[in-house]
Image 1 (cartoon, rainbow, N blue to C red):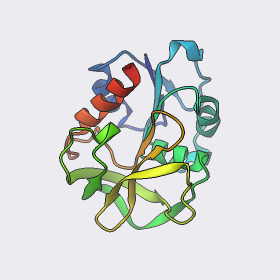
Image 2: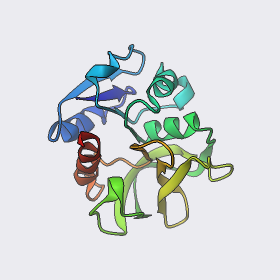
Image 3: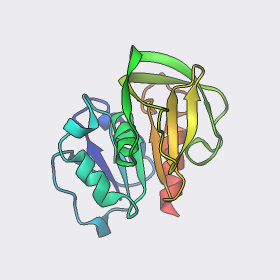
Image 4: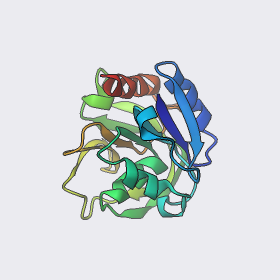
Length: 187
């Protein structure tokens, strides 16, 4: 079962629909306690408003999960995982709410079998900074102007972040990316 941590976002249940096509899903809010970890095969951290450190127990949950369970962070979840590794967030020069961007990606893991480049939908005003980007993370996707759109852990298996919204109808191959994560964590 995949645990989906809802950061009080309207996109959470679209993510739920996508994930449930591949594997059973349980949803909790970011201020709920974690269920027993032996019942969870992986965790998806949903998008949400605000910043990771002001999102309920999100950062504590990530610390409890790192190295124990596979993680996929989407938008706010991506930013939260990056911060847990020591990355810094910076306010974007532009606000990206419902804007489509072209990204290049590494073509592996989450992006396995996905054409390059692709169009993705973005809803954010903060980004993970490239300044002092943690050595433990590897950038796996970027916009044409160099903003980080995806990363994976160099040392921990199956830890990923994507800044864009794979569950948005405006993101190409979003369901396939979710399917790739579900396949990775089902092995």
